[in-house]
Image (cartoon, rainbow, N blue to C red; front, side, top):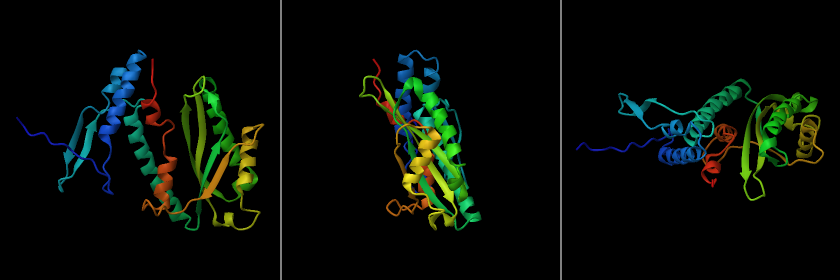
Length: 246
């Protein structure tokens, strides 16, 4: 009998990556698809089943070949996609800071009222158009160097029918002049008004904005912390895992 060796995947910082946890979530997601008679259930369950590694001169193993299902709601694929997006975004932000050393980052959260599953698609489409219009308004555009956004959707199953809370996380890169004078600075109430206008809302939405600062507690710089936050995927795997089907 040959000895079986359990491989441990660690990031550059030494943090163990949760392959086992994500694969178990993937299998549970596959079970849900099977219960609902989705044809892709078998394909989802085979996601990441076989991994082939190659070893470098230092003895470190690197993933060289595998197969993933690429299902939009697959916890395993979502996790890997989020890591990839986070890494890419971190590189982009680092280059932006290199080119505009005096630039500053803002973290903006834009929300609207909860909606039903039938209305979710059109609501998300409207939010996409509204964020584009908001950034073109005279005052926001005045000191804006660029921005990146992600959409997060959570589900509330306690109501008579599932209600979806959809909101946007926006990372803004602005000129340092943004913080100098009322002609440049935009207060939280002003951001709220701009978002209400862009979305054509009859109510006052909840909006939050804050300057990005280094995350001392997690020992991460502001770029990495911001990149990981804005690269979150739209639907969290735990929302799928905790859903009970009858």
